[in-house]
Length: 83
Image 1 (cartoon, helix red, strand yellow):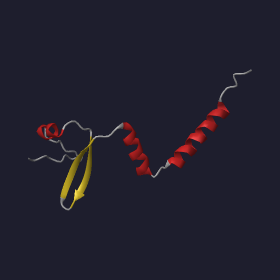
Image 2 (tube, one colour; image 1 turned 180 degrees about the vertical axis):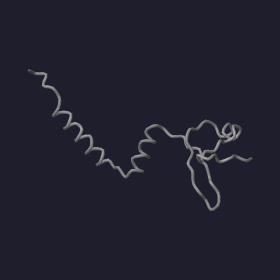
Image 3 (cartoon, one colour; image 1 turned 135 degrees about the vertical axis):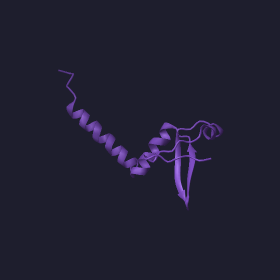
Image 4 (cartoon, helix red, strand yellow; image 1 turned 60 degrees about the vertical axis):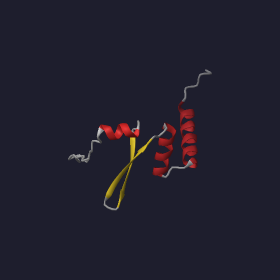
């Protein structure tokens, strides 16, 4: 079955192919020799976040540091409600 690559590097996957695979929103794309392999990926939102953090090289220490920084910055600009 043929699929055409558009000028914007987009491909429409035939409906009967996607129906046969079941619902998915993302595809893992890889080149194997002279082939392009598309594999459906079914992500949970937390998995997507973890994947992006990993891709960016952000670890638990970075996240903890950012949270501490944000809490400290928020605390310094909060209005004093006791007065």
